[in-house]
Structures are given as C-alpha cells and as structure tokens.
Image 1 (spheres, one colour):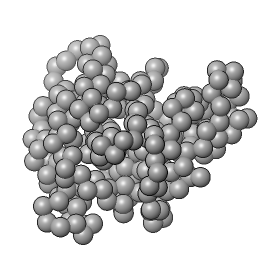
Image 2 (cartoon, one colour; image 1 turned 180 degrees about the vertical axis):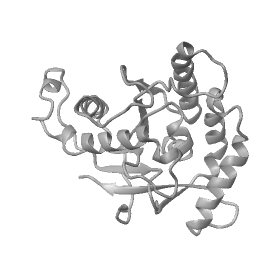
Image 3 (cartoon, helix red, strand yellow; image 1 turned 90 degrees about the vertical axis):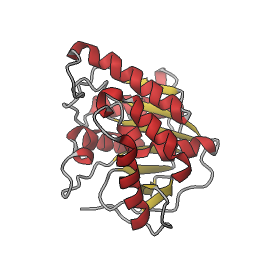
Image 4 (cartoon, helix red, strand yellow; image 1 turned 45 degrees about the vertical axis):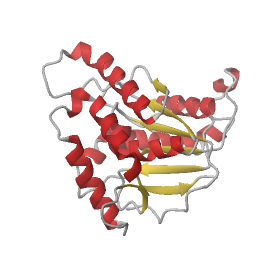
Length: 244
C-alpha cells in the first residue's frame, strides 16, 4: 500500500500545525520546510504527543529526560521561527496507539489553532525502512492525526464536549505526510539548511553522537537529486493530500 500522487500544494496557506510523536521528529523530518513557511509569513505551531522519555544515548537519568527533551524542542523550534510548542500529557514514549483519547486531543489542538495545513508523520509503514519513519509511535500519531483531520475536527458531533470549551468545528484544507513511502512533493530547503542543522543540534541528547551537517547534506542531497533538482540543492520530501 502506498499514497496516491501528491496534489499541488495550496498557495494561500496562513497557518500550519505540525503534529508529531516525539521531540526532534519535526526537526529531522521537516525543519527546513517549516523554516521556509515561516519565511513566507505562515504562522506555524507544534503539537508534540510525548516528551521522549525513552530517548537518549547517554546516562541521563530517566526522570530528567522529559524536561530536558521538552527544553530541547522549544529551543529547536525557536531556531526556525516557531514559538508555539504544545506538549500533550499522559502519553508514554514507545506505547502510543491511535485511540479515541489521542484523536480527541489532536482534534482539540486543530480546532484551537485552526490551521489550513497539517503536517504529520506517515500512517503507512515503509517496509524497506523499518527504523526511523516506521517507528510505531510515528505510525500511531500519523493515523490519529489523519482521523482528527477527517472526520473529527470538522464534525460537531465528534467529541461534543469540545463545543462546551468553545472549540468549534474546523476544516483542515490539506495534510502533508513526512517519512512515508515514495514521497513525491520535494521542497527545496537549500536556503534554510543552516537553520535545520541548528534545530537538529538543539536536540543534544539525541544528536550529540551524530555528525548532523554530514547527515543532512547526504540525505537532503539525495532527495533533491531524486526529485530532479540541480546539483548542489537540498530538499525534504512529503506526500501532500487535499482534505477540503
């Protein structure tokens, strides 16, 4: 199973909401693209489902990891010009599932921020790459976000208690999937790559062991080449679907 061909990206986006499972997911997958959106005047906010308590590569005590990773994500977001970063409570890293509680939380976030565009992780597994994008938390958040975009956030009878909180239905116009199979919408991020690298480095607990600049140049150069961009360009890739 794969995605259909991407739709052309909408040209009149005012707000975009990024929904991901862990601190650093958004920066590994799309920090360059988001930096470009901010440059265009698009208002961007993040929703992070966990605080990444199962992450890390050193001896940092487990009880210190959530606060550390939250601080890292806020610093990384600021690098690309994003200042609203919301974390959900009660969702343990590594055990996410696309159930009604998570759908409700993401629906509330969508109705609160009222984005034209949502970017999230792919709900489809990449069988040729069972690490990274195919992490079960990524798949679960991609599925829950898809359900929140349609039908939940636009259906006033879904989670009716949200109406009492003043959260009226909202229609998201398009959804971008990162990390899925055969992404075919490439975004040239050459001019934003320094900010992507800085955002990734802000996640020191996750990237201190990694040559971030080399990793970015290699991966994004390959994506750009596969998309037919000129030599020396760098790109991130997505699947874009209309949801109006």
